[in-house]
Length: 221
Length: 221
Image (cartoon, rainbow over the protein chains, first blue to last red):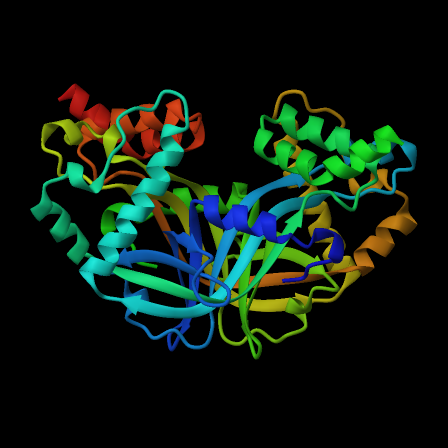
């Protein structure tokens, strides 16, 4: 991925993106070409030199049976949005502006290991469930946390036999947070207002956060 | 991609996803392994047997210089969301339920062609701008459509020299709309309510729409 210096994502941004993300596209190169599946993953930064992603696929999904050649790639996406030049103060000032696309993403490269092992998979399922139920219960209007133990044991064992575990042993991570850091400070308020007006608070907040130090510094100065 | 029959996306769903989508991950296999970039694309279904995607990358982005080996892959993502078993009527009825992840995605495979040609690129930039400005202006609180002609011509020519055009001549599309169609009709209302309570109207509407015929049919019956 092409990462100009002003769009390089710091370790804190990468850690938060990987820890909180929902589902990521896992892409493997096989003898039959590129194969991809969207999968929820757990990120464990304490494993090996660069951490690991853990997940699972349906047993009927051929991707785990076809050996992954070389490094595999998990693409983790944060917010992304079209940025209109009409939002820039610079549009009225001199007009030398063009549209762009903001986005946050991490490209997680690693060696893919298959765990066809119900005990391994059950551990991952329990941890994924805890992660996503906790995120859900933090929203308003949600009740009744669900846990694996709420279902009949025989049913769970059948479900576990129908899935296969995957581990991506991370070799390197490329991460980009392209959030208008290359725009003059005077353009930031217009971008945030334009995104908010579209109801896109997630992208508005990302731009605000990524430029807070610079913009607040400018205001103070 | 593994696509059980009940999750196969029909042509209308694929056409709408590709026509309206924002940015997609373009993954190419190169001598240096897998490389990916998130790019806005135009979809033209009238080209060749399966249509084409058109876009552009920064000239400084190495991906276009490294020959793509075999088919490249553009991953177009629709809505996706964690689905809690607590939302299912079946949870209270018999408890044989587990969490899942809903998502809509198209895997667009094709041959990648590079167009290092300012006139070709300008045409794509104009069409991309029209597409995304039109989508923006359909939102409330947006004004002032922007067009390439609003900027000084010398500035635009400089910008065009800094980007390179890409065409993905589509060879095949795999598409999946995993929107709870495998759940009993009695579970659908709970899923829609649970997603809405989280403020996720996009996923709620996707589930409602994908199951409308079945659920409404059941109500009538």
